[in-house]
Length: 547
Image 1 (cartoon, rainbow, N blue to C red):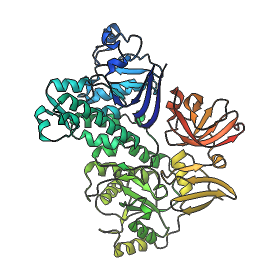
Image 2 (image 1 turned 90 degrees about the vertical axis):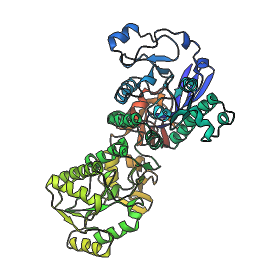
Image 3 (image 1 turned 135 degrees about the vertical axis):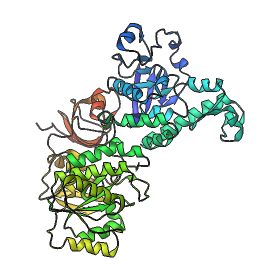
Image 4 (image 1 turned 120 degrees about the horizontal axis):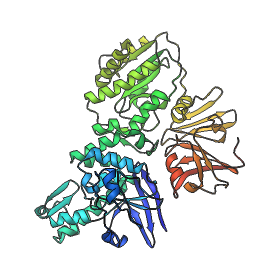
């Protein structure tokens, strides 16, 4: 029996266990695959070029029986849950970023998610980060052994003359014994171990970006992959309890960044307000705990909607500043914004101002953020009132901001409504709800009924069974006829709301029980996986689900 069980995922990258007969392999890893697949060397017609058209591939491609299951971009794959999928010749496409991503996405969309992905003859210490990031799990030593035969010394930074071994750049056992082959194999194993650590920490994107800077093709693959936003977005968690490192230009196109901005524009419901104040971001997050934002809020005095202009997210309304990644991103601060940052941020601000026509828009900004706000105002016909020339935290600037707001009516901030709209894409009537707010903890009640609590790690609201009544028909997972005794596994799932992503709060409904919990995989994976935890259950209520 063959099984693949994912233990941890970070987008396409996974930590998993592959079982094939008596072999149990923890992925990702590199092994001598002839011991795992002894008949692979005797297969014929497995070397069809990846670029071959359907007519050629269908005539000559022979997938054969057994493991691994060979797949080709031009043909519909015949795979099942638990298979090991082999993309032959994948090493030949690493220098063709567009084909790499197009073929990868095409195959991934057709193959069950609980399969292991094998890239034969492809893995080197300098590219295995990218292979894992894009969803490959299993590797061999063919590529590094070939480099050994070519007298090349392999490092994550690239392949160098073998003489580099003598300079002390590496102190592994292979280098100490002057065994180039041993060093190259150990270098690959070490890099895979490091990749595994970053997957476990849900930081594989940051790691992939840093490693890819040495190779133009690798950066191009990241950029091309980001263009497949719908494909990536459904496979990425909606929230993490760790930082988002926005250290490179690629961060502007990260699917998590695009999703946050998209939800601000199309899901988030701001409170009724005549005046909006655009504010700069702060190094400390959430912004409201920083000294500068305390001063801003004091000067505003609740008389305007507070909107933070920032790169890479574009615009962060005060009410949802704790939601990932608004309270989690880390970006180098230089005071300089490049044209791409300005254009992206200005576009988000312009769309928001176009959608909500405020009577007044005040820019309490400086530098790049102010320039982005001016670009947004110019593109939407908004008259921008500027409350400072520089140093928004200066006493003069704060006094000027307060004076500009004199006589304006108070705005009723509603963190609960704002967060729920962003999170569940639903307007919720919060009148009559009381909020007990002692940062970072928030509890929402109506009378004696406990409705929601805030997850301080992600900024998302966790509904109770009573709270779910205010969110009808959304983020539901239907299960078979059983009472959950713990976490719910994928085989027990009948259906799931397509909007569900890993990390979302969900209500589980079944003939005999209700349960609240957090999705451990996205909706598509829940319904197509044969193994793995689908929902981390927090509480179970016995009894049939309401109709």
